Structures are given as C-alpha cells and as structure tokens.
Image 1 (cartoon, rainbow, N blue to C red):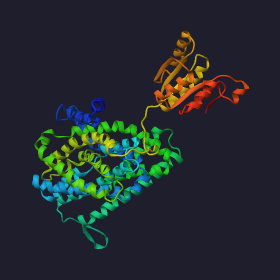
Image 2: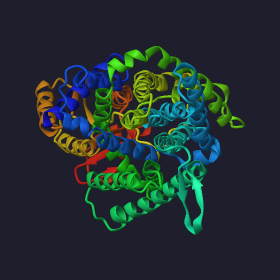
Image 3: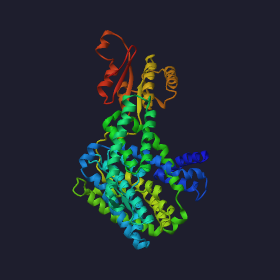
Image 4: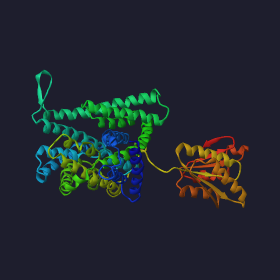
Length: 544
C-alpha cells in the first residue's frame, strides 16, 4: 500500500511537470499516470488504495473547495446581483435535461435514466474550475466585474442541485417513483414534492454551518491561540472542514461541500489575517491532493467500456454543452453588465467535468441500474475530454475574452518570485548588510542579488566579499554580481532589471551631520528609487 502512494506521488508529480513543460495541463499527465499504473494497464496500484479512492478524492475536493471559499470576494458577488445564483442553477439544469433527451434518442434510455446521466455529466468540476478561476483572480482577469467569483459560486451551487436530483432519481429507479415520505401530523409527500425543500435545506443549512465553523475557527485559532504556526492553523481548519463533509454524508440535510466553501468565505469577513494564513496552507495541501485526485481518477477509468461508447458519448457531450448549457449561460447573464466576449468565456471557463463524475459515475452500475455501464463510460469520457480542455482553455482564452483589472491581494494568494538586492562594498559594514538581507530572505523565502560596484582594482577585497556572501547566504539562493559604474545609477538599474522587491544597503559615518543627511550614495538611491530601500547602519537598522 505504501509503495502505491510512492508511485502515485512521485510519478504523478513528474509526469504532470513533463506535461506542463509541453504546454499541456499537468492534470493530463496525472490522469495518464493513473491509467498506466491502474488495473487497466500495469496494475501497480494496491487494491486497498483503489478501495480507499473515494474518501481520498473526498479529501481532495474538500481542500479545493476551501481554497475556493478563501478566494471569494463578497463585494464582487453583491455587484453581480443574481448572476452567480442563476449560474448555479440554469446551465446545469438545462444541460441535464438536454442530455436526458439526447440519451433517449441516441441510447434508447427512458427519461429518468437519461436524466440520471444528465445529472452526472452536468456537474462542474471544482478540481479544474477552482484553480483556474483563482489563478485568473491572481492575474486580474475579469476581476472588475467579478466574473471568476460568479463562476466559482455558481459551480458550487450547481453541484449541490445536481447531486440532490441524482439521489432522488436513484431512489426512483431503485424503488419506484411513487415512494413517499411521511411527515408529522399524518402528512405524506412524494420525493419529487420534497425536492424544493431539500434544495433549500441543503443550501441554507450549508451556509449556516459554514458561518458557525468560521466563527469556531476564529475563536480557536485567533482569540484563544490554540495553535503556534500556520501549519497547525491549516491542520485544524482542514480537519473541521472534512468533518462537515463526513457529517453531511451521515445527515443529508445540508451540503457539506457548500458548508466548506462558506467557511472559507466567512473567514475572510471575520478575520482576514487568519484567512491569508490558511490560504497559504491550503495551497500547499492542494499540491499533494491534486496528484492523488487525478491519478486515482485515471486509475478508475475503464478503457474497454469507454471504447464502445466513444462516438455516441462525444455526441451527447457536445449536445449537452453547446445546446443545453449554452441556453443556461445566456439566461444566467441576461440583463447583467457582461459583454458578449465575457459571455463566450463561459464555454471554456464553466464546462470542465472531473471530480463529481469520478465520485458518482459508477454508482448506477453498482446499484444495478439498467444502462449503468454506459453511464460510467460516458462519465469517464467527459473527464478525459473536458478536464484537459478546461484546464488549457481557461488560461488561454481569459486574456482574449476578459478585461484585466486590479488584483486584490486580500482575496487571493499571489504567487510571485521575491528578489532582494543587497548593495555592498568591501568594508566591514558589508557583513551587517548581508546579515540583514539574509534575515529578510528567510522570512519571505526570497532570492538575493548581491551587487558590488567596482570603483578600484581590489581583486582580493572582491574575493573576500564573495566568500563572505557564500558563508552568510549559504542556505539562500543567491547570485553575486560585480560590475563597474556609477554606484547609485547601477544599483537602481540592476534593481529594475531583476524586478527586486527591496534594496538593502549600508550607510557609513557617525558625524553629527549624518543625523540630518544620509550618506550621499544612500541619499541618491533613496531619491531616485521607486523600490523600498532599507538602510543598515553600524549602530541601528531602520527602514526609510
């Protein structure tokens, strides 16, 4: 079993990186890894791991939905009005119905079985859509109108709706459509009559439990200080979020996944610094969860069944997306401030299938529903076709169809390479400048450019400075540059060329006039640089 996890993580990661270097979404490499390692080809994954794939995928989905919640922007959602709500219901509903009709025509399914297939195929994949939308937010694409936020919220709501209808249809097909539920006071309602109440209950209670969990996390992690670092914060938050999902499975009165997403959303409102720490922690968790999710997803695909339904499956997927979902997109954005290009973006941005299909695609077959094998094959086909296309199309078409706005760093983690420039000479003060730079670099996991401007022919002094740099920055990625020129001008030029975040430099001299006027080189850099400058003195350290 342990060997299987080693294979999954190592091979899944490196094949994913190979795919990324080939300009292909990494998840394609991970899914292919699962197919090759799985029972269809090499059969190298332990049966125990395959048996545990459902809870492992559940953990991965929990992580990505918490990331989604921690990245939502309340102001942008309010600005969109009912667009996010409509995106949560109309595209999925229309796609499910159109797929049901197409399945009746192409596969000779009856309507309930066709609608069962529609519910599986119509669900959107948080594992593809959430990272894609969060990346758009970190780059600023569509943020002015809150388009990524609307898609994120709509995706979560649509999955709640379709999973509810899916459960109802399973009950219909297994026990008959006339099954009734007894209520207090002798009242009885059919399952179909209870559906609106179930949807309302799932959404309302999911949001309420999200608020409660967010307040509990703030109390435990901020007010009572039960944790000592960001890793422990993430551990507690992930455990409580997973508990919500588990409880929802045992007590299906609320949506566990919606509760998780709501928890992240309300954490931003209640304690933004805590949300920022958790955002970083869940980014790290997703690095592992993503590999496990997509490799196990690939291992679950049945190639021989897939081959039989390839052509009719592709036709049904095309009809569902280009007809049913397109109608839903049009109605969802009707009357909004979205222009035509932004509406077109919904095709690549809101169509990917993966997570839900992997989780429930095999259930009809397991419960003996007629056509279950075909349903599973089309579910697998939808993953293989739409997940790679969605992962590729979201970043590809966003710059062509969306407007770029200002990034809000309080809502998303902005991944960027941090570089610090240390400007040093051959004097003893260089040790203090390098020590201060090293401290800053370790705090922010930054790289360092050590710059020495050559003014005299002192090769021995430069060699000594290089040795000092290697010793003080031994655990930090750094580069030593020695060039001739004007000191202030070269410092600013190199800082701009390397896009550094901060400049660290020293100031010598303790004369009385130094308290009023900083040394001439430091003063020139301060006056000319748009980049923050940290001045290191022999007797004190301050930021100017």
